[in-house]
Image: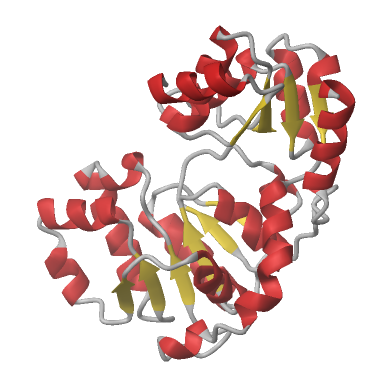
Length: 289
């Protein structure tokens, strides 16, 4: 915040555009608002309705400080209106993350990432796991590893592991559980194109990430979200996402349904067409000049 304030004081921008729900999003929003610089929030209105999530606090406060609110789905518009924000500030523009995916999809397909890991297309699963509620609680993490151990007996799982997850597995003494699950393969984190390539050719994705729920919906890949809630319900109502929570039996049951060919078909949500950024730029020009 201190360093960003120096930038704002020196450059006096017409608007500060912030994206998503990370701590830097909130920090820049607060700093800009204090200096009377308008804030435009991309991905506004997303709500998990779980204030225990740090990201939820970031979303709510950032939206409250923003003069322009760019939303990815109609439910986000309604969330903002319920919180008393003026409809005149809200603009449904689509999803910039999907812009990125569509732009780089062909390039990603040239990476041949599954082959690098000796994986057969459409016959493997991809896993990501990093949220504190999942990996910082020994009982929860133990249950998830149990579920993954069962699933890897039926399909190989590639796990580009977040450093915090690896750290917790070691701290809790769970490394032995991984040794007994040879088809659950832990690898270093991957770049965007490599990971996109992996998702494009997977039979399913298991995740506690927000963005991956959206990307799998566009790719038409079945997604099991290992959380009790999601701030992206459109991926469930319209996409390929299923919220399975953290109960091991429920996770395994959902995975087996996918393996049996019973996955959700899904469709592309409204305005997820790769042109969200164009709409944002047009509105900024109209509003800011």
